[in-house]
Length: 279
Image (cartoon, rainbow, N blue to C red; front, top):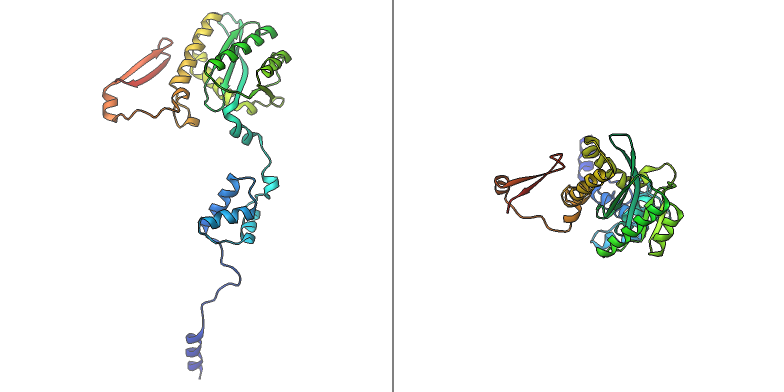
């Protein structure tokens, strides 16, 4: 009889299945979390509709539970604009400005004013002075506006810190051209991190390896470095392309041919090198 009971049990016992809906696959969970992170204004029902448009059926409660377990808040709180998302969304129309100092061989200090485009990483204008008063800073703003007008660039915001050298007249002059000045928080250089990165690169690759004689020498050195930075130096943010060539497709040259016809151009007495394949 025991043998018969076991035979009946093996014949009529079905695989055990947990009650409720089946769990979501790892690939589907990754897709849902990606949609939530890339679209901060989408709620869980909006995500359900987007997933169903791809031919995948998922319940709203499963999506809501997955977002909660992943620590993603609901759409109203998730859609609040952060400083990073603001910069990414508005980068095409944002410039950054900042001062940094350089001491010459006789310990005289010069002030360098540099502007940078957040979208292209290009340096549109740079200036040097030993006395950065309000009149000089406003004149550099006028020069910048003429440079932007010549290149037909539209700028709506300019980020700079709360240094006293950026006087109110500077912001008002930019405001008359439709450019709003955005002040970074106090003692927060990371709020202008892209420009701080350029300043660090200019020091490491150029200024820290030269003895500066005077203001004209410093302006010449910076002009050469900025030309190299804009036209040749690769940027990781641009896919290892230079700012001036980021929108141009790279030349289709065979590696062997490029190595055989490689040419080197020396800048600043061999301090900087540029390599190009000869035509």
